[in-house]
Length: 480
Ligand SMILES: [Zn+2]
Image (tube, rainbow, N blue to C red):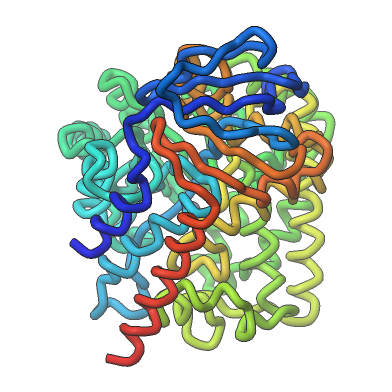
């Protein structure tokens, strides 16, 4: 109840008409700034937009002087997790996860695509409460749970051992309210894979997730997979090499001499065939096949945890100690690599950035996703969105191209591009007013002055109050 009250107070300027005058509108699709605009917001929509000289704010409007400010669509983090810690199954971390929701808002993240986990019944409820204005947080799309094989990698996943199982699971997920289907098969029998895709599409759901090891990207796309998570799966071996690599892997597992992570990574880097990729990527673009490269998690959990201490990180204040412990290599799920393994994982992350750039050049639509949440070391709800955007620029995309992955592309993925993901008349008023131009330097997305969420206004001081309240709650819970 306390949380709800804080959110409602923070958005007390709720349903009124807002006019932002003389503002620089960031036309993300065009990659251009339109100067000197007045943007009128009525209810949750942009109802008028035009030059300030000729666009008069309505008499009753709350007027914001946008001089020197930049107005862009709100950001969507298209890969997040709300889940408990598999290392500490006694604590579900339900309230602790719920408390991270406002952290997204405070960083301009107006929507998240939650990739499924063991808190699904809570996540589905939070989604509905947020949509109804009863809880503070970003709009949520969720897979609910993940589909996996006989021995799931994560708690909460549904095992599917046959094509019939897979169809039932998809139907059940749809009934539970899933917005899409997430797969996490290590290996999958083709009939099961086809059943998942067929049933999901019959239910009107897209399927995305990890690429099963026994399927090449080409085969998965051919079968109808709608997208995938993590740029490492952009590696494209020649099919005939892949077959023998797979056979070797299976035999070595039987013989008890399976390759460890770094060794598998080295092999996959080596097997990547640039010519094959150059043929495949345009086919991904034509489908379209959606790729969420998750570049920063690739760096952070694979090698940065070996090189960087986060103990003194100021963001520690905002997270429950149990969540922080899931990120600490001493107490969490992932161990930091050392020596030759560290070097291999660094080179791998560099290759993933390069493949992401190539896929983008070929026209493959990308989505910005951080993979933030419990167990993914120091990938932090809200903050990490900006780290991911910066890393995509580092990978070779322009700031405008990167902004599209978190705004207009995210809207296209949701099938909402007609009404969301841009600053234009008739669009939903999920907007960020920034102090600097994000087309010049992507870091400007961190310079959030005002958030407008469904037409509700959150000033910088209200967003700071939200953050301070979060830190205070953590402090109080530690004292208890
Ligand atoms: Zn993930």
